[in-house]
Length: 278
Image 1: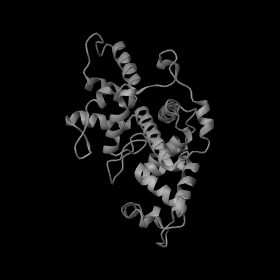
Image 2: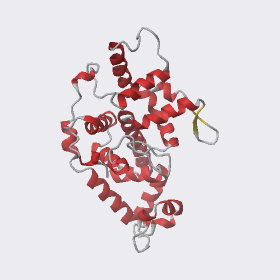
Image 3: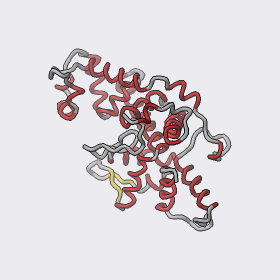
Image 4: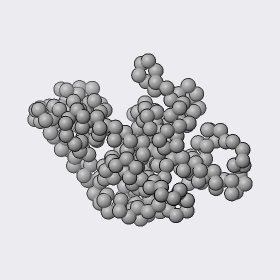
């Protein structure tokens, strides 16, 4: 596990504190539980903003694969000052999302490494999943349900949870053979015996609980740095704010002329400079 996961990130400086702030701000903006978002990020990436999976395209704090990231930016990017990205994303007749310009596509995918953008997109994705599951299940979706939606997709989670309520002791692998093949340790124990729906849900619940311990205390102590110069009344930093902040810094150093229009690719470059702490 990364050292990030063991830091007292609420009060620390540097990347650990920034990640914690980003998650807390995403929670505030969307209403998704901070403890859930923190626990999910710890499980997925050990709070490493640039984590990259070796077996898939999963990248960033929340390990979004390419298609899932393009989908959530398409749906919610404009709400956070990222219309330049969402406007570039299209959905093909096959249901897959694409960006015509390969360079711009990569720039959008690289936003997964930006803690503020990754956190708020993960929170919006969780909010969408929460609403869907509650319509399907007729009850409030719990944090474990949201993690199942992250793990199996929201449709798969709805099917899993319905089966868990009907036959909690049944083997889950029979209903999810593809997922079981890809995640054998989740669906089978060390002796090779299949785990039940109830067993899997309980293990996910315990894992989330372990990784979100102390989250409410950390959330209460999060402070927005005064030198970020947020507009009066703002409750959180939007990803677009980092473009503005970095642009102001570069202008103060004489590196750019703010009187001249800046292309979208330049705006993204400034955002990424802020991401890596230039």
